[in-house]
Image (cartoon, rainbow, N blue to C red):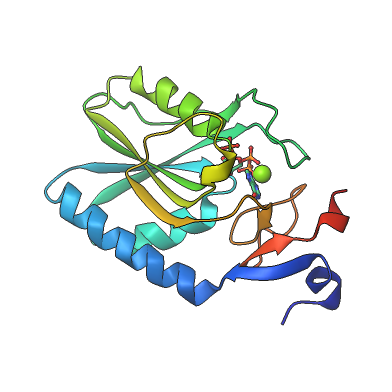
Length: 183
Ligand SMILES: O=P(O)(O)OC[C@H]1O[C@H](OP(=O)(O)OP(=O)(O)O)[C@H](O)[C@@H]1O
Ligand code: HPA
Ligand SMILES: [Mg+2]
């Protein structure tokens, strides 16, 4: 049960924890089929992708490595600043690696289009993207995404790693944030 303080900040649950886990299991089966026999490197994008990465990595039966990059473009608002900053770089050398970027959400697409460009300069054998959510109506740039969990409406959502001003990341479900919280 959510505390009533948190429940008042949400308008509706978009996807429950169970629905998210079921979809991640389907994505994992596709990824296993595509990367069988390969040396896979999952790159999680901090901080939003922590929950997706934890669940996807444990669902995958392939041998894999995990690394993390921290970038930020939203600060404390609900609109991307468009300026992506690297807060923490990868520890791994990408030369010859099969890289799969793991993200929570593609909204404007600015973060991932920048990150894809950045990682593609590092000599990887391939760089693909797995994102749990995508908002097609919010796209400012098109990003080529190999694995998408759910396409969602253009509402600001929180939970399962997604925050507003660093709050709500720990909610198990993904819910729409009530406009009174940010307006
Ligand atoms: O498609 P875009 O409009 O670029 O938005 C998507 C990005 O924004 C969020 O990250 P944020 O910058 O808020 O950092 P966080 O993961 O630490 O919350 C989210 O986790 C994605 O990385
Ligand atoms: O809808 C969203 N919720 C939380 N963080 C985000 N970053 C981009 N879009 C979103
Ligand atoms: Mg954020």
